[in-house]
Amino acid sequence: MRPTVVAISNLHKSFGRVVVLSGLNFQVEQNEVVCIIGRSGSGKSTLLRCINFLEEPDAGEITVAGITLPAGERTREHGRALIELRKRVGMVFQTFNLFPHKTVLENLIEAPIVVRKQSRPRAIEMAEVLLAKVGLSDKRDVYPSTLSGGQAQRVAIARALAMEPQVMLFDEPTSALDPELTGEVLTVMRDLAREGMTMLVVTHELGFAREVADRVVFMDGGSFIEEGPPHECLVNPKDPRTRQFLERFISHAH
Image (tube, rainbow, N blue to C red; front, side, top):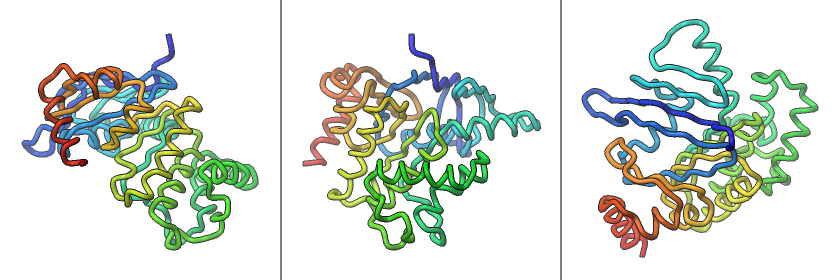
């Protein structure tokens, strides 16, 4: 049995009267790559944002790498536990959120120095390894405004990895990119998966999901409708809603 890195129990989230997540239960094991698919508005991004409490869940409990946080607490212990939980989670968004006034290297070393209290030489050494990993060693001293979208997203991935997270969350990391730049980001993600990074990926890239995911989850209306290995979930889905989504999705893609 592989250890569980992320465990979600009875997770609820509403915005006003709109129920976005309704009682989700979910686990991700170490080294597992889980791709979450579904229409816009099905709750996928909100689920990811609840995992590191960028959105405060209304009810339920989230455990990441042994740190458990129940929804709705406001104690000092809760605050401390939240900091610990966030150290273990790397997150990559649709938009790159790089600090525009800092160079690529400075973007990477900021959090390790400030949050993890790493020495500057150690943080720089790590940053250079990660920039090489994402194929951007030559960009270490430039500012984000000079990067293409694909390069900026690869820097954002390297920056998340600089915190040595135990799980990486990707929220549609390629949806803001031109198709020709999407490939370079997916290549980096593929390499991470191959190296055994635990990953939770909200994506419309069904080819990537088919190739890389250990498990695909289809969400609709804030619930998990279907989950299983890609060859089942994407090729031969059992639930009519999954089938309908895939048919519509594939007809749009062509």
